[in-house]
Image 1: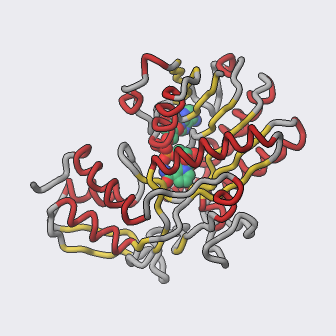
Image 2: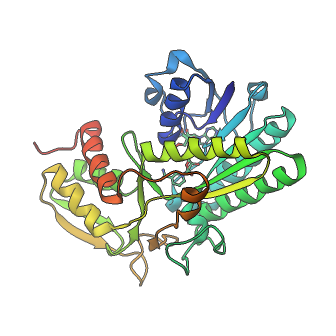
Length: 319
Ligand SMILES: NC(=O)c1ccc[n+]([C@@H]2O[C@H](COP(=O)([O-])OP(=O)(O)OC[C@H]3O[C@@H](n4cnc5c(N)ncnc54)[C@H](O)[C@@H]3O)[C@@H](O)[C@H]2O)c1
């Protein structure tokens, strides 16, 4: 069976591609390499078809021919950028998703797995937040993800495509090149005596390790294929959360440095930037109940493992 991974040279996409190859699928990857890196696909590059293309204006639509499932992960994941450059996020996240859905329709692709985000909820009133909570994003990134979800749902009802919407929490692991752990380590690499932290450190969020994420993604996909056409929306996160202050402690200990820490809140209530969700913990009851997936590692374990991996990859350590 042929499957297509958009954004397959990215962090999550590269791990997903590896797993799909291991499982024996014929895998095609589309990526424009804007934040992607072919090095991430080094283990499987000679066993996949890689197509460099920009989904904002696809020039290679034929790649969708004979594809059974599209895992749509290509996006600009920088929430902060979306606040200052909304159009970039509209183009890379809304327009690109629409183009993918159009090609899915045109080539009769049966299933789409769409990488959405916990940011669609904005400042949730209920925590842990269930899937039926109102969608009230506070960043253009979150709004773009929500727009993609609505579009996917409409394609299900109108064209009979099957769709899995995965609202990922913060995903971490080796090869990660954005988010708080990466940001802290890059700053330490530049200046190990001082560390500026975005926000007042009390932001509290849930983190999920990459292998848990790939398991959830594949299990939710298999569940949807087995159960027939519909919109399958699942939160994919951990059952616990961790504060930025604790993450800073873990990263510093792992690096062996002893910097002066400066917290820099961007808003009166201590956010890292306007549009930063201060508290995020998703209810994962639905995916546990319907799909049978559970995380194998806590937020803290995921952060510790990721910090150690990235320190090696980025060459940051003091030892
Ligand atoms: N990492 C997280 O914590 C997280 C959390 C929630 C949701 N997500 C979503 O999961 C998906 C994957 O995230 P990631 O962390 O692996 O990000 P990433 O930046 O590592 O990967 C995204 C990939 O998409 C590619 N891409 C971007 N725009 C493209 C375009 N127009 N055409 C073709 N390719 C394009 C990039 O080159 C990159 O390889 C994204 O949709 C992201 O929004 C990620």
